[in-house]
Length: 179
Image (tube, rainbow, N blue to C red; front, side, top):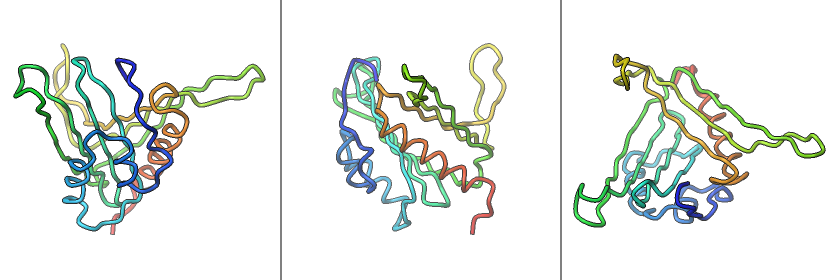
C-alpha cells in the first residue's frame, strides 16, 4: 500500500458481497461485473486487493474461484490526462482452471524473541499455459502468471491467512479433471 492508506479488513467476511462492500471503493461495479460472469455459480473462494497507486488513484482487484474458473475484476483510476477527471477503468478476465499449470505460495517468516515462527508476508502465483510478451531487453515470450501478495502491513494476519487459503483452493483444483 503506497501513501500510507489504511483500508478496512475484509478477511472476517466469508461472503463475497459483504467482503467487497466492506473493502472496495466501488463494490457495485465489481459485484455487477462478477455476477455477469458467475451467472449463479457458487463462489468457493476469493481474495481482494486495494491500494493507492503512484498518482494517488485507487487500484482494486477481486479474484473469485468457482471450481471451474478464476474470475478477476480489476478497477483502476486513470492517470491524469488519460481521460476525464475522475474516470476509471473496469475490466473482467476469466481464466479456466484448466490453463493453470502450477500454483506456488511463498511465505516470509519471522521469529519472535521466544523463537516462534510467524508469517509476516505471503506471495502467491498461478502460472498459466498462455503466453505473454516478454519485458525488457530479452523480449520474446514467457508464460502468463497471476500474482497476489499480502503482508502484515498491507492487509494483516487475517488477509494473509485468507490468501493462503485461496492459494490452497486453487492448488487443490489444479491438474484435476474438470467435470
